[in-house]
Length: 117
Image (cartoon, rainbow, N blue to C red; front, side, top):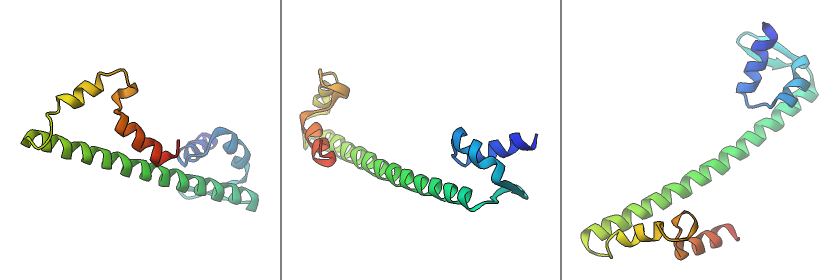
């Protein structure tokens, strides 16, 4: 039962099963948490922490970009509702076009300039 609890803790920490298989023998229980007992395993866990940090940064960047897109869309919709721009029907027509995911050429061009692709 203790091994199952240790595995669950390591899975919750984001380690994959291959890495867990390697590091499990080098883990000691320190209360409710596990602690590494050998330096090599501690280095593996540090590396995984760095990978998590990079993933978090990428997700935060994607989140910020999506928030910007949502905000820009809300601004366009508000302008259309006030009569400052053509009604949102043009946007819905783009969404039903043959473009993948209804992306307009403008959005696609902006995506290319942001990603370099």
